[in-house]
Image (tube, rainbow, N blue to C red; front, side):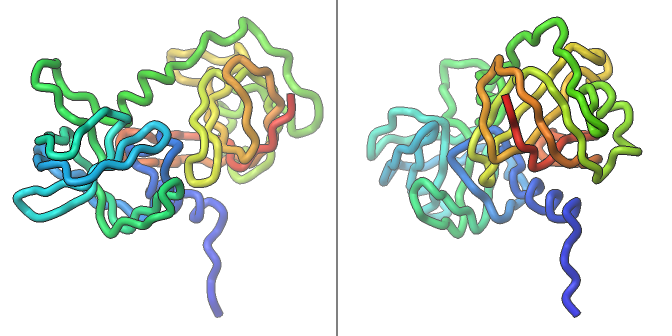
Length: 240
């Protein structure tokens, strides 16, 4: 008899593959390797640009390898250094319709700049949450909860459906076939993080939209690369 993974186990398996690419909408990954120390140096043999990223085929001291960095104008023949490299194995780029046996993600180091910023950090900074409304009216119905109620009641709500009406303050699209949205409704406190909830959905909304999100509560989700959530709402349907 084949045992099927529970929804919670499936979610954790999927999320562990995201790692530092959580906020990058151009990719879909199958597995990750530990982050490599130091920097990767090499000569650019080939470049391919997609939305938000530049792929580079590099000639390095250890042989040829592919790398991906936030969109950067790079010429063939240039010598580049990839800072804060993270290697991923069996990585599928849906945009390029290509699976890489191994690829390195990072950012091209600028000798004249300050400390390097990783691709994930750069994306996170560019997608800083918008200021939420002072208060959003709570949804109605037996599953209706405020953001703070979901956060505070996560233990009892684990694996149960909830309905939250709130404002979209941050959006990352097309990651593992889903969109990732942060919602706030004016409840809770920024001090303990009870004012914000992460929602995954096939639906899409823009920053500033007021939406009703109905999904399933998941708890203790660790995405890796510093992204860990005590609670989130999975596979939500969004209605404006």
